[in-house]
Length: 66
Image 1 (tube, rainbow, N blue to C red):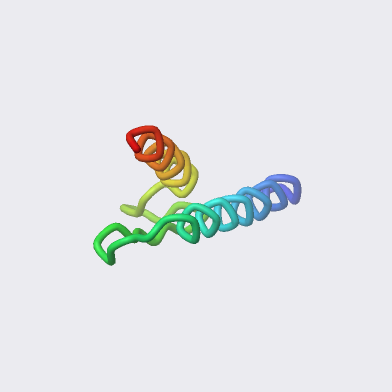
Image 2 (cartoon, rainbow, N blue to C red):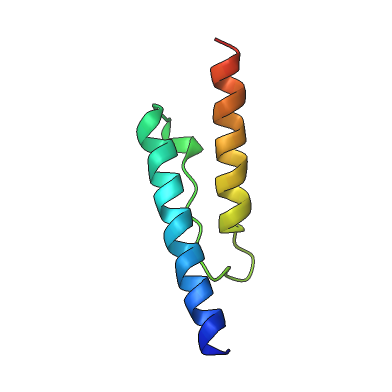
């Protein structure tokens, strides 16, 4: 990996962590709704960026239902 790819990966990981924390802090969750993702993606693991995007979309949909 090139140094720029590592820096980008570290920034993407930090952004995902911050976004997920903000989403989880803003809404009560049940234990079965919590999913741990790691970046870079582990074999057989979830995709961190896709998980953050889906969580935000779900929260927006849930918020518009109220």
